[in-house]
Amino acid sequence: MSQVQPRVRMPDALVILFFITLIAGLVAWWVPAGSFTTEQVGEREVVVADSFEYRSDGFARPLFAEGGEMGLANAPFEGLVAGSKWGSAVGVIAFILLVGGSFGMILRTKAIENGILALIQRTQKLDQVFLVLMFLLFSLGGAIFGMGEEAIAFCLVLLPVLRTLGYDAVTTVLITYVATQIGFATSWMNPFSVAIAQGIADVPLLSGAGYRGLLWVVFTGFGLFFTLRYAKRIRVSAEQPQRAADGALANPYNGVDSAILCAFVAGLVWVIWGVTTRAYYIPEIATQFLVMGLVCGIIALIGRRLTANDLADAFKEGAKDLLPAALIVGFAKGLVLLLGGDDPTAPSVLNTILHHASGFIGDFSTAVSAVLMLVFQSVFNFFIASGSGQAALTMPLMAPLADLVGVTRQVAVLAFQLGDGLTNIIIPTSASLIGCLGAVKLDWGDWVRTIWRFQLGLLLLSVLAMLIAVWIGFN
Image (cartoon, rainbow, N blue to C red; front, side):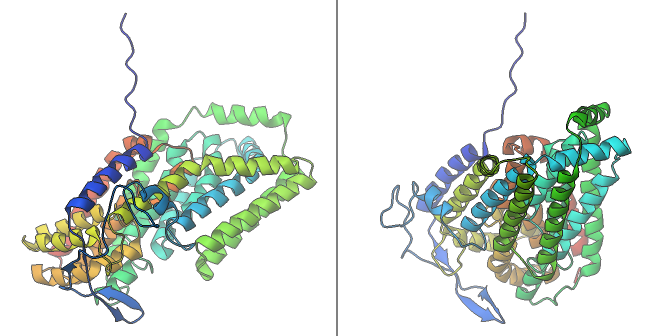
């Protein structure tokens, strides 16, 4: 009798980061560090082209460092405490834990679950229009105001909705985070990526909107096609949501559910208003979701649905569920710091890699150079998973390089956009991706196994977009 062979599992993201960190440590010992000179251009500090120099001072990566310095063994701790409340790593970690705890309280009230089941019971059917609308809205969010980290909270909101409708965690990430990154990568007006890159490259701000708008339609359509095809394939029998709704009759929807859901929807409106009109970011959004969780919890307390201890347990449980994602964010940041960090003026191996890569790209033909720019930006995004940070570091070199190889600077900006935005869908160093996967309890290895063909399709579309841009003289 033949034995069934167990499915080979992808290594956990922490395992992958561990070995990549070991390799980064070897690279830091072998590759000399370097730095650039910067200059002030308007309100931005940009790298001066041809200012690279090797630096041996202030860069050492021992196995273990003392006095708060960086060593191979110090990378996890230094990554966890790096940055500020405005970003990676410590700000994103705090955001993930607070939002996770807040949604733990909201979900413990059962109001969202009861509301969904009541809706299904009344409508009997919710077709794929919901998936289409969500994908388009999140893609527009990424294109218009650079939505990214905000998708973590919406993954928590939509997961119970989609599961009740018969869909899974992958579908949740597809219609939220993946949609935002497609919009981010093809945006014609994102102030955090394309506007910064165009400003550094001395390209008129928000120019080239026509071609980018066309790319948004094509890439969003491709992403939507993949999402609907996947959702149709994995959706459970349509009878299961109905059976779940019938089983909910023992605990019917009531006035407490209505009050909690009204508070929840009002909170979401408050978040959207803050992001779109007041430029709220990580500190404000985390606080908003904490207030939402507390208000919903207090309503459940008054309605005698939960006790104070129940709310405390729910908060701790929700934060605990997202702790692995928070750890990965910190460890990934430690990897970047091990290589010297993303400061162009400080000794860093990343600066050396950037310098030599830009020189290598200039040795090829126009079309090949444009594609190599895309490939370089895609690979470099593994280490600097920040749109504005990558633009500030790479565009001062890529823009003059574009002049040398005979492509327009607009093409160089497009290579940055596509390379930066689309690889965020798969790289384990993206804090937003890991946060979303943690929110829906999806292992990174399982995510890669599902998404790799789609990612390859996006890469091929990106190469085609770059070649067409060169051919039409995109400017």
